[in-house]
Amino acid sequence: MKTLKSTIVILFFSVTLFSQTEGDKMAYRAYLTNNKALWEQLVAQERQQYKKTKNKENLYRLLLAQHGLLGATMADKDEKLFNDHYKTAKNNSKELIDANHNTANAMAILTAIYGWEMAYSPYKGMFLGGKSSSTIAEALELDASSPLVWQVYGTSKLFTPETWGGDTKIAQESFEKSVSLYESNKDQLRENWRYLDALALLGQAYEVNGNKEMAQKTYEKALKIAPDFGWVKYALLPALTD
Image (cartoon, rainbow, N blue to C red; front, side):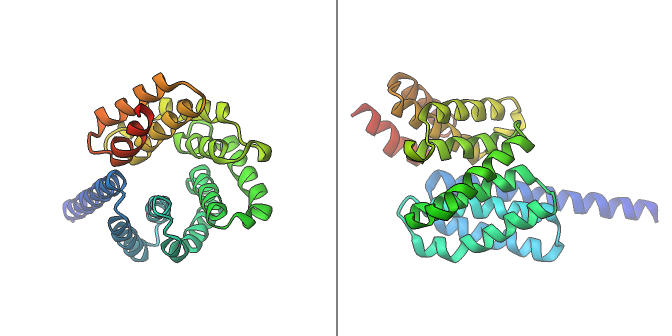
């Protein structure tokens, strides 16, 4: 009987691990190609998995997929798709925060959602700007070792006007910190779209701060890792070298 139980546990773990790996691969492909349909498919799969388990880790994986999907809407300003998903993602972020599960990262994603809301509807800056700043500041206090938290913090500093607290130098330093944290753990590098996103953002920060040489090196580094990284290959690097 004990042997049977052990076998069941091992099989369950193997299926779960396989599922997680496939989800990570799907997210990676979706990001590299900016494939919104693939992101939607991943969100649907993660949502179904969470409905089955009601496990907070599955909820976190759903939130990560929603984070990717919402970010992908920015490329072609697909506000309808954003509106279809952002409220649920916000609720999932808050549920994880309340449950104290991956709290800092959930706060970072909530900050990113606030930022996208303001990008689509600038008038929301009047009441979301303060929330965004305080949420990411609290996330940093909770976990300054999270590359995702530094990544979102840098993004907020890079794309916020200087008069409202933006600072491109701090953004660059934050992305450097994020990349360093990703690279300090090899397990975080394999098919990790967030790491590639941090590199792309770091390149942009170098460019804005007048360091085109470092921007080019950073973009080329990203392409060495992922030669089919469309955003860098067809947009960021050509624009830099024109």
